[in-house]
Image (cartoon, rainbow, N blue to C red; front, side, top):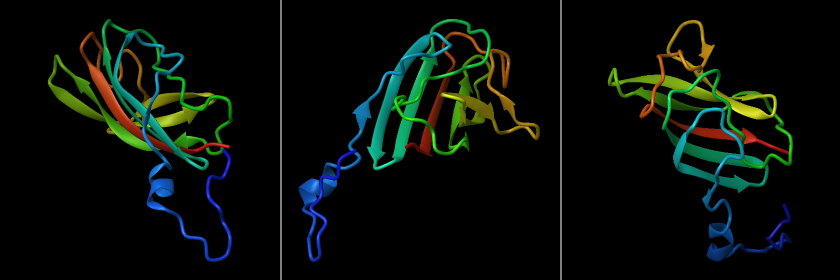
Length: 144
């Protein structure tokens, strides 16, 4: 990312320069292992720090583990592990579960964080997912 600021002794940034940094942009992941609709998927990047917020609703009963292609896939993650928080909503049980997005290789997965033994979010964990169920999260991570 090119530096848009004239950094020199005594330079003052304008409001327009500051406001142009980290603007939210729509982002549709190239790959999601579950079928559904991104009601919101927006990202902002300031230098190497990425902010990504997601609201996704399933349109079918899923199988396997949820994986999502993150923004800025051309670069590699600098740090792995958990990088945010959110929740999963079970419409049939009218219940919410704490989840956290985490970096797994070149993808993002969700991990259930309510249980003592944290487990990856799959079609049957933390509940049996079905059409209409949803998840939301905000992820913040560093990317080179």
